[in-house]
Image (tube, rainbow, N blue to C red):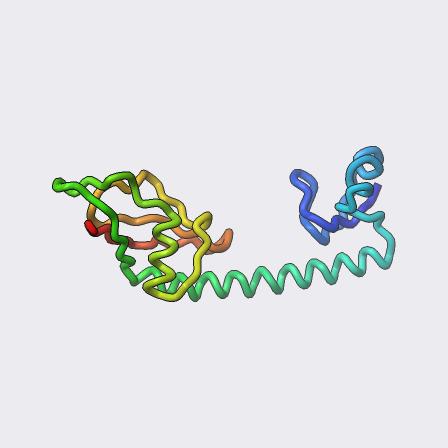
Length: 148
């Protein structure tokens, strides 16, 4: 059966695509849950509009992510944490703390889930983590952990 997807369906396609799926899959899952509609001429025209809007939104999101990257890449964000005498932290610096520090120091709001901390940050000093604000835009964020 030929359907127009109204939502992203893993393994099938993304919103706005016209795809061929098994009749039972369409009748039992996609159509009742309103994830898709039967492909008619009108529905396919709507799908084209959805694809254009998605492409436009994707382009604006990518441009916004690149602007944030231009600001954050040369910047070093300072995070204050409690530390012992030897520079070891009591606990570790989390992505939420880094996101709060970025917002406080630069005014840029970043979701903590977009920050990838490789290894746990448990020492005072300079560290680097990765921010992925868009699937195509990934950049390093330099942070400096100071004892507070």
